[in-house]
Length: 507
Image (cartoon, rainbow, N blue to C red; front, side, top):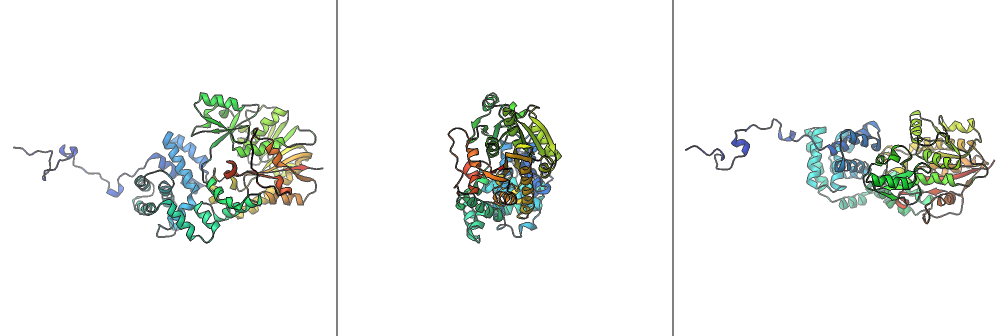
């Protein structure tokens, strides 16, 4: 009688493959098996490597990478949260990893450290089951950095995952030398930035105790806000197009030009956005632009200037507003490639409204065209500390030394703008930073050196631009000149931390 080939010598059932005689094994050792991870995690890793290795910005790297690899839907959303969330919370995660790795983090290969950060975010910052977070990250490590480091990644992530996030945060707080350092570490900001933001809150009329809420707001993913450029595409046009494209829009909180994109919809699905009659623009950015356009003038209102126009969002809104009033706009940008972005942003504006897109140094415009403009916008280059929720990698690149160079440039640009505006005309000094050295101190220093300009009420101008019935909290008014300025905040207004001071040329 022949033996039953479906059972082995111990009487146990053989697998179907062994029954067929297919007894070969994988040529890979156990540590080499399943080398590849899923496309979403690989995409997030590649974004982190470009951000670190090439000083790239995640918001410019990730979207084309997702399109190129055809990553869509839930996978695209997962990759986006994994990449941005890891970048935002890198400081917190590094402090945790430092307690789980046996050598200083700066002695790890950067590729390995990025893998560990991605795994830690899945364990502590996302709703990913622990076993999946560890196993998938180990697979990513095997795929990108090798089997040896993957074993270390496995051990470290298991150590991270044994402690809940709340306990990690308590430990980091207890070990910090002071309260601001504790908030900076748990809130994932460099300590110098946390201190500067706390000082800015107090300096702009708010309680310094709001710093924890501000840091939390910086770590929350911002919603996409659209601008309906007046005279080109009103909000009702965008709503109709959104309905046709099955995209949900909500009214903005403050600006009549603002609409908020709900969910993960692609704004380019709306024809008005695709052809530049509308665009993507933070609501705070819209408000400071509207404040300049609404400021009272003495005399004519025919010629406007955007002194630092790239990449073109504020210029496009200014041009649309100018067109409605019969005014014209000159857009100046020092960098040729950014000037081309300005031209693209302005392509829907009638040609008789845009006088020209000028490529040149904004510091020279005042001398070249003295008293030539009625309204001038100075959207000055700055540290960008007000937009850390949108560009999370910026917080790890900026240093206090950057302020010296930037504030000199900001003073020179503001001086040029005041020379370029005519007597009775208005200049808006705008930064996407609340840092006192880039806001109040720049304006104070420029005004101390000249007697032909004065602050005017930016708060009234901004309030006049709000949607009817909106009641905006602009902080305490100190009763002095600084109480005329506007400082917006992510945790209060849901916008970037835009600053605007309005100045009138006297003679």
